[in-house]
Amino acid sequence: MAKQQLLPSAAALLCAGWAWAASADPAYTPINPTRSDEAITLTGQDLTVEQVVDVARYGAKVRLSAQATQRAADNYGLLLEGAAEGMAIYGFNRGGGDQREVATFSGNPLSAENRALLARRNLLEFQAGAIAGNGPEVADEEIVRAMMVVRANAMTNNAPSPQLAQMLVELLNRRVTPVVQARGTVGEGDLAQLSNVAATMVGSGAAYYQGQRMTAAAALARAGLAPLQPSGGDSGALMSSDAYATGTAALVVSDARRALEWADLVYAMDLNGMNSSITPLCMVVQRDRPFKWLNWDAARVLGMLRGSYLFNGDPNRIIQDPESLRASSIRQASAWQAWAALRDSVATQMNSSDHNPAIRTDLSPGDSWELSTPQLMKYYVKGGPLSHGMHGYIVSNANWDPYPMANELEAFVIAMANMDVAISLRIERFNNPFFTVVTPTDVFHDKAEVERDWGYAQVDLDQEIQSLATPVAPSGAALASTVEDLQAQTRVKAARARQVVATTFDLLGHDVLSAALWMDVRKTQDSSRAFGDAPAAAWVALRKLVPRQVDTAHPPSAAPSQIAAAFLVQTPAASFFTDGPPMPASN
Image 1 (tube, rainbow, N blue to C red):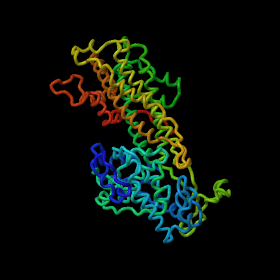
Image 2: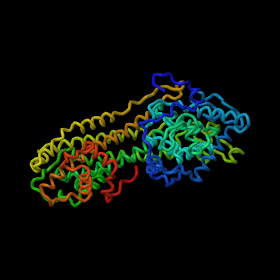
Image 3: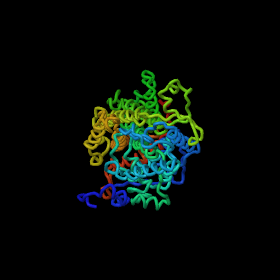
Image 4: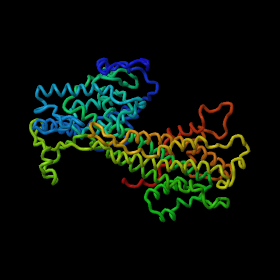
């Protein structure tokens, strides 16, 4: 349908399965499922970033542990029993948001009348997810899959019906990936994005089946799946979550680690290229300032340089490098520290509940003083046939406020920006003989091959990064009749973090080219010079892709900096250096 034409009505879209949206999206990036023969067990308590990446990016399968399945089933039973006992339960027998005091049904939720009402209500809410959110569509399959695996894991701490929990697993394993709108969340409850997933479950809207776009109904049929029949409190159990931002943040943590590992190794290459004084890294300095991350990163870079000519005497070596080179370890260590804080926060976020209400079958009135007070006893489920005798609490909360993860995302971006400005400046310092003592043309005779890089590209990249470092202004728009009056903007913060990591790789592409050129210079000056095993191996590997002497008869297919950045993304720095000191303990 042409953009200028009117869109069909919501009702028509739902009835038609939103078939108009099933045209191919040329911008869509499907995953490469190289680990589809592997399986990861979701317990709800110990999902790792590496496992999220394996599922989201490489197609690993998932299964729910027996304990997680039982916990979810017990919570589901408690939800049903609580309603049967007459308890007011937010989002179940009471409405959500500004409808929180409105009774939606009473009595046993499994009575014929209530069962039909809940089935109808859930189905309509799942179908309506096909038109939730705002474009553009999420272009990377891995982001949608990351959201889904995070939700599948954490949802076992809530009260999904057994069929809902299994359906999310089946979508992942059969690679049915919903079309998800990138915007429409305030970053505090990613309702729109998870509503898009809900729509696919019941065959509404559009989805991708193994990378091919079609209607959700067709995708389910191709995967051999019957549409879900949601029940109980399934709409809330699936949609009340921050999994969109959390899944994206998990991908950021994984990619950022690789960027930081390269930042350290390229820094070691830069030090070799500058013929630097390595005194800032030595124990004398580190004992003088015992910040554990600073000490760790200095020891890490020092280990990379072990065996380098920099530890030999040189009468031409200046006493002190520019600050951008001397302080790079400090900036990079600080970025590592911010990364670790983000890593820990993401790990907690995706292994705990961000759902409202909180449902616990493992607590009794005597477990904490407040639980036996009249206010909390209003939300105590005594236990009965629907809960198989289990008791517990069902209480409203603000768990979908995704702090501290939102704060750590911003802190990480700021730390990366402070690291990247040092990278950008140290590239430029190589153009100043005050620091290098010589110029490339003093050493090489092929002058045309060492034309000066005027630095526009890396300055542009650094300016882009610095623009991302301004914190997102706190917002408090009063939504849902002022009931929901805080927003976290986690979607924006996670997207910024993803962008700053990607742009850092581009900037490091320029940095590693500069380092390689100056390693060429130092080796040409004295062929006996060694650089340390890791910097030398990285230098040799890069030069196979980007030789210093350009073959003008067969010019490269892309700019050297782009080839270098792609090399950094595709080749882990850990393949050159694995012997560093152990990372500091978790915060």
